[in-house]
Length: 227
Image 1 (spheres, rainbow, N blue to C red):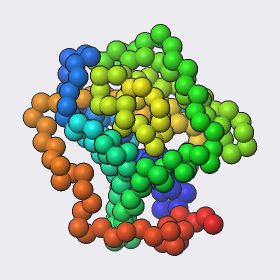
Image 2 (image 1 turned 90 degrees about the horizontal axis):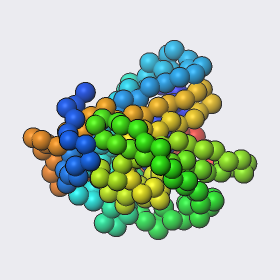
Image 3 (image 1 turned 120 degrees about the vertical axis):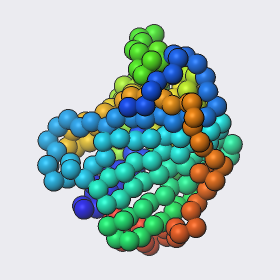
Image 4 (image 1 turned 30 degrees about the vertical axis):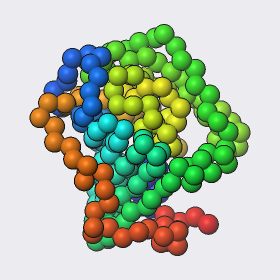
């Protein structure tokens, strides 16, 4: 597997279950995204990419899990202290790694770039039984060029605190549908269902498994490249 392909989904991770009644808040549930691709993707690379992402939510904690060919990526977000844990299961290498990211580290990274501009609109769209509002999430790339991501969100799903440090920091609701732009084309994430009945989510689901080892900066450079 190409390092760039794996690196892409590590970043995107830092996605049909019966739907529930629209606009009904819940404390615990599993959100399922369908992931689709549009553009000039290499067929071999595309075959390795995931087509689904699951996000388990329990109060102010969430865990998103994405499984690709020969690897999986999970991001655990703790809304209580704004920290994150990244879990990498590189089954093609027989290795499992974790990375802890503190709130201070996230703020330090955010300070390196410009703050996003979020333009909220009254336009709505029903996604998985939930009425969602449209927002334009505007960021700047490394060259200072503005990039706009259209995102549909809902304020009754999860908690806005779970967005901190992720792709939609500051967004007032849970992202239900959005499109990520890449050099190869577009990646669309769209919620297909939310399960709240008979869901078994435990505190231990948000802990680091004992068979994972810490991913050092040196090892990360070896795996993904970079300075």
